[in-house]
Image (cartoon, rainbow, N blue to C red):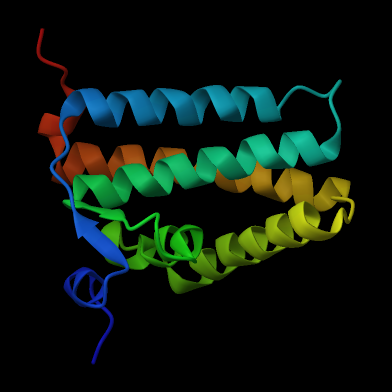
Length: 152
């Protein structure tokens, strides 16, 4: 069975989700705040990496929600599902998705073993967060522009 968002729904990795512009704007603003925090040089590389990784997850979740889904957070591996869905949600190249998945694994190792985050990995994570936020915004403008306009 080829991987698709519908198949991820069928196997319980995803749930259907109705989103609106306010949800999208809130998540994108949070991603941007985390990216800003990740650029603060007076804090540790681990904290900067965590902030950048959180921005990646928020941008990826925005893309998933814009497609009408969200992960089932009661199931293990929902971070992996969010990242690995990016080729299906915004058409992210597999090579970029592999980089993001490497960052996800590095975060897990650091969180669960206390391993240090090196400066190169931290900078890569910040760069990838910045690029993914931009990619999601471009995709939204092209494919779901109504989610970028908050009704008052």
